[in-house]
Length: 91
Image (cartoon, rainbow, N blue to C red; front, top):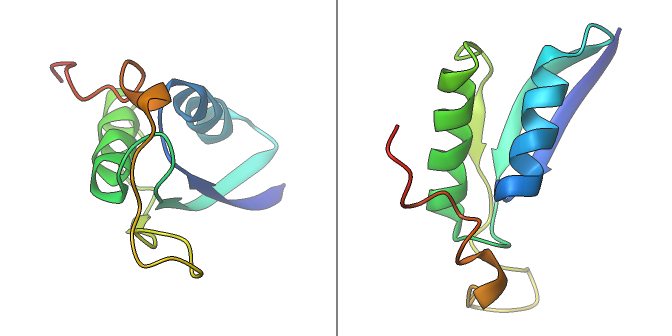
C-alpha cells in the first residue's frame, strides 16, 4: 500500500481525486493539504472537510497550506473556480 499526501485546491476536479484516493484499496491517504488555486485556501480546506465528511472519511487529517506562492505576497482567485468552488452547495 502506497502512502499519499494530497496537496489540492479542492474545486470539482480535486474533489474527485480526493474521493478516489480516499477510497482506493492500494492507497493509504495519510493527509491532505488544502491550498490556493481555484479557490482561496480557507475555502479549499472547508471543501476538503465537507467531502471527507460526505464520504465517511473524517479520520483523514486536513491541514491549511500557504495562502499564496512563496514569490508573491498575495493571491487573487481566478474566475475559473467561481462555478467549481462548491461554495454555494449546502452540506
